[in-house]
Length: 201
Image (tube, rainbow, N blue to C red; front, side):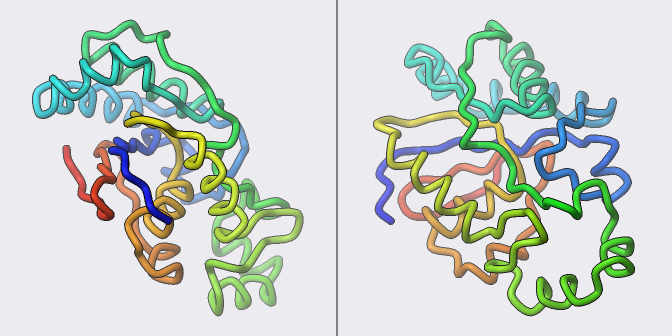
């Protein structure tokens, strides 16, 4: 798709589920202490590195987050560290993480033990596979594409790793299979613009 705006994307900070390598999907897991530290540190880094851009986005009320607690907390801590009102942002449910359905709360070894056929099917086609009662990356990309179609200007987004991978495929032209396997770092920002993406922080 053609996307002519700049999107500053932040994945939420680390949660206890992240630390344990558990699939959290749409479970509403709060940040751990390391995740809170990551959010504050990133806010300070962004203020120092791209302060004028941050101020312009703030003037345009262009900050938006997934409604899950870990993304809201990341947004508020980062905004506070950028010397902005922590509460001045909006929520969009389309920015939620993909749901892992029946696999949520499990580690990958537990998924392998409980659903070896499903685990094998996901390894074979990670982009298109949907866990039982869950979503695939392809389904998530459809949801995120619909959200992108509503953007009329630059934006600052706090969301999830799966959403970042969908954006890589939709905006930056990363092949779907590669996007599904791309690490999405916590504590850094990913800037999408001019048909590409790069990390800062």
